[in-house]
Length: 353
Image (cartoon, rainbow, N blue to C red):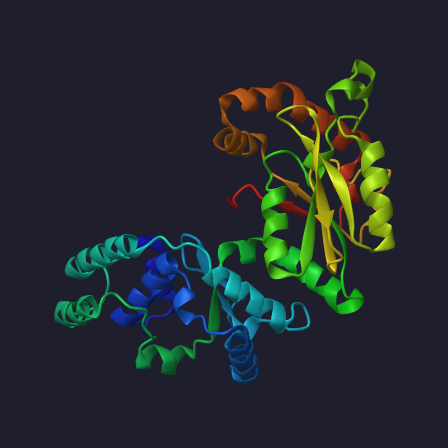
C-alpha cells in the first residue's frame, strides 16, 4: 500500500491527507457506502457520464488489494453499456471488504510516513484531520476541494474482477445488444477459474449456468477404450441429447446430474430460458457441438498456479488425482482438438485470484 500511495502522490501531487485516506478507504472497504437503489445508480451514472470532462485518464486505476477505479472520462459506452457498468458497480458494492482494522493499519502506516517526512504533509494538519476522522468513526469521505478542482475526479470503484474480465464483459454485453442474448462456452484447464467466471457473469447478466462436471462418466462407462479417447472422460452422448438439442431450441429444459460421490446420476437440474446461457467446464468446446456457441472463451494459467488453487480448493488427495489422471486427459483433449485456437477470447487468469 505504501508504494501505491507514493505512485498516486506522484500522479496527483496536489493530493491532501483527506485524499490519501479516501484512497485507503476505497482500497480496504470498497464501494458499498455509495450504493443507493438500482434506478438511482443508473440515473446518477448516466448524468455523470454525460457531463464528465475528458482528462486523459486510463480506463482503470488500481486501488490495491481487491478494488480499482474506472474513470468515466475514458469509458466508451459503445463498448460496454452504462446499464452493465451500473450492474458491475452494484456487484462490487456487495463484495466483502477487508474491514475497519485493515483501514486502521493503513492509517498507522500513513502516520509513520508523515512523521518521517516521507510524504509532504504538515504533521499538525494530519493530526487535526486524523483526530476528527477517528471521532467520526472512520467513515467514507469525499475528495478534498483542492483535489476536485485540480483533477475533476469522475469514476466508479469496482472490484478487480471487473477489470480482469473486461474483454469478456464487453463481448457478452455486445451479445445482449445485438442478439438479445446467446449461448456462451467457458473452457479451460482445471484451476483456471471457469466456475468463478460463470458465476460472475450470471451475477451481472440475465444468465443461467450449465456445468460440464454434471456430465462426467458413470462407473460402468469408464472403460480403458473410452478413457483413452481425447475428450472421452465426458458423457458426450448424454450431453448432446439432454443439453445441446434443447439449447438449440431455446426453450427451458432439465438434465440429470452426475454425482461424484457415488459415480452415478443423482437428481435433476432445471435450466430456464434466460437470455444468456453459459456452459462452463472442461470439454465445453468439444468439436461435436462447438458450433452451438455465440461466444467461446478459453481460460488458461501456468500449471503451478493451477495446482496451488486445486490444492487449496480440493486438498492434497484430490490434487494427486488431478496431476496423475484428470489434467493429462484435459491436455490430450486441448492438444488433439486445438481447443484454445477455437476460442474467441483467451484469458490468462494466472494473477487474478
